[in-house]
Image (tube, rainbow, N blue to C red; front, top):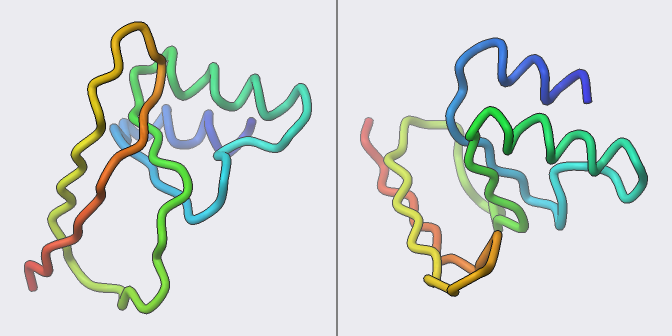
Length: 82
């Protein structure tokens, strides 16, 4: 929850994680999601970051449009920009 508030306070607009969920699997995880989503921060979960070097990239993320869903699978692509 503290990390989510830190992200909101810095004006970050998108966060990605190479795990199944940005929040833990308890009450705190739900609150973490709520903090981020109420601030309109895009959350990308389950990214495969294996072999990605720390560099400057452009992220292209193409989620499936699923009517009535609050989330969807997406194809995320990094284009190296440095």
